[in-house]
Length: 245
Image (tube, rainbow, N blue to C red; front, top):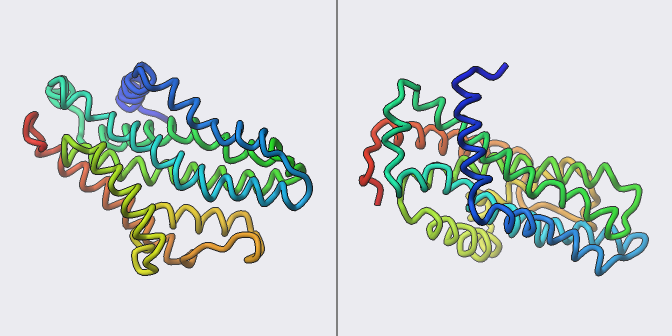
């Protein structure tokens, strides 16, 4: 059951996200892989390979983190910039409730904008009868939305340049360093998500094989997610407008 405070916080946060000028662009961006799948439609095993590649090369490592970054860094960032954060923080509401609600709303919106494409690319690409694999990737995207949202919400409370810092993490760390250095993969959210997708889909190694073990991915996901939420709560408790730099 959602408490009145959480319901009010969730409603305000959702309106803030959906009212932004870029909301429609994010929705179109999230469905871009489906359009690509329609253009390069295949049959048989080639269709399955195409759908998996769209997930593992575009949706998971590109679409998901960028959408999560824009949404996650915006749930507090706009209020910090325009000074309305003082109004929110003046209310007698526990900081952990504010942080947790906003992380969950950011994750839900991110998942709504990105998870459908992970599922739809399979039938659109021609991989009919592969709904279970599509559901596995969609579930992994939803889990990734939650993890990324926690990280990016915390980042928005660390610095006013959260969008830039997040892009550096996604592009430089995850896109370049973690993809080349085996040890760095244990500090990469996308590697955790890819491993979850691999575990849920149960695909042969010849089709798709994650770079880290499921156990390592689960442990590091918990560390990243819980650590980010706890940091965000601590940061919000001591927060003063103008402090973040």
